[in-house]
Length: 315
Length: 309
Image (cartoon, one colour):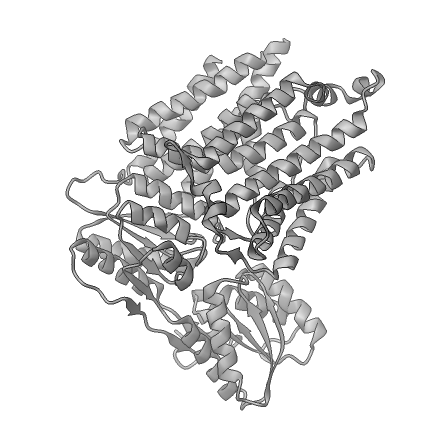
């Protein structure tokens, strides 16, 4: 029993003391604290976003608290994080919602605590937010629909308007993936030579991208192009293509322009990827939050640029 | 011995709270403690069912998927404007059916619980995705959401539901023959059977309890998120097992209490909350929580060895 006590105290104490050097929330008086709650930190996209946010926070002299759930899809955990951070008296909350509707319940609590909200990367569901009376100060992000269209237009051009396309979707019901998909379908709609032969979710994941595309290739050996709603899934598909010894014969277009994808594009195994600028989003999010704290006006929508990366401009 | 172990866990919780109180001024406030209690409620309720199962020497890996399936059934019933009472009954019934399927396969089919519930985990998840086509169902009436957002006095509704569940389940476990059989089956199944107890029936019922608890948790989760997600509840089985084990229930069965499980769930909730308040990196949080689980089981084993020596 005594051992139990000592052991637990020891773990708790050492764990917390050692973590504490990052600075407890609100330690510096007068220096406002902004929380940035991300979907996850095990994706390079969000790691870049955090870097951009941290640079902005350092430059503007605010304390930044970054937290994320263990899994990207865990809205309930994200909600807990928001509830917990509100307890620490943060002055503003920047958040990339894990669920456009679900997170509204957590934001109600932020509103009640009078914490201004900046939404980043993934929009809130307009109806859910309106019904709950949640108002975001601004949305910082790129237009996923526009990105999907860029990818579609590129594919039509690169294939000369004749293609049999497979699509790897994100998690169904996610605003981000759905918008990219709608944009892509819109862009290829009028190209009569372009047929979408298969469209299945691979839940944003690399290994699922591999498996799902391998299955698609079994069912439709004539697939000659792929649009993946994220690069991780596109990279999975690339592996499947290589396993089928068809590298180079299938055009793969991804989204996010991750480093691995850019490398594949430069090498010629992948055709293109739509680049977003997550670090830019992180920077804009923190700048906006600081302006809101200072009582300055900010636009309701802050668009971050998109860019198509192809062999011509891949580094 | 049991009492000593439980007391140890409670001291662990108190010590943890004490450390957090020293480290951050935001921890020991009424609003934060209620916050922790509310956040812990879902895991605590799932862990009630898990405690019954583990006490009987089994394991239930399907709880998270059953939370998802019963949640989306609830969401669909509410979306189709069914009366609240009917929707809730349907939800609990689906939980009971899932639990009964587990139970019958384990007790009458004679299959290992690990395999059976691993299968159900996949089936229930697939069913939840299938009926919703993978899309969440959201936007419910305030009359339903009050189950998560309501308060009696200053106590949030999920905390009240959790307390009620624990009191009731504790009485079942300690004051009924069913409760005694749960311990008996976990202690020595063969001896229990030889003494004339309908072991198969009671074993099946234990998994029914677990399914039912998952359904109750699903009600709170759905009300809390204002959304029923087919991908909800992932890894809940691990959190529930962790709470049960930290609370001193032996994975070998036959030993443990619900009070211990509640403390175990609270330790996990307080840890997560405290690490958030302190701004600890989310990667480090996983390490700390994992460490606590391992140390709790280690202590359990060491104490038991000492006790036997």
